[in-house]
Length: 198
Image (tube, rainbow, N blue to C red; front, side, top):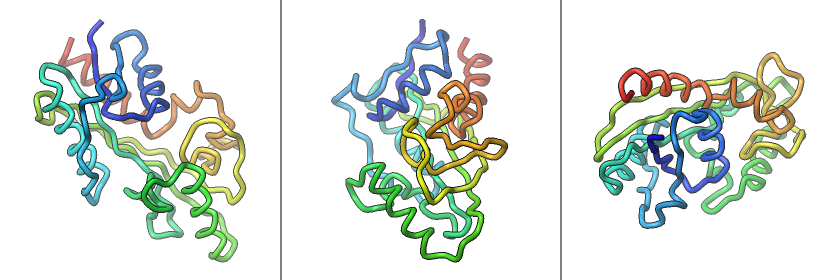
């Protein structure tokens, strides 16, 4: 089975990608390659940050295919925040709970309304320090002021995707892995990999 490295130390993301790729690829994360360090995310877009990570990790892992993502939450009422700062919205070293708490505070400052937004993901496939392919995925929905469920990670307990009554914190992983922003970007990437790397 061919191997692909997902350039993250986030075990949840590695598990998600492994589940979505099924038995076609063996997926490892950076915890399996502790000598690899990712550059600071200095990009102003998800794509810029994903390219930075993919090219740096693939340069450090010659001969291996490397997949990197940058993803986050955009809330329309907040002008697209937290956006590329989703993982550190509450400051450096913030936990998922810290970030959700700040988001709830920011939304509570606004007049009551339906808070629309989306999760956005960019995936970049690289080898030997060079980008090979880029895909994007989004899922639209609305933000709740009260958390629902404990599943998933990040902002999942606050995000209710369009067409569902529950948040990603409640919906089973099988459902999330079909309609999430990362799932949609990965489906495109999987098709490209099947066509070009078979």
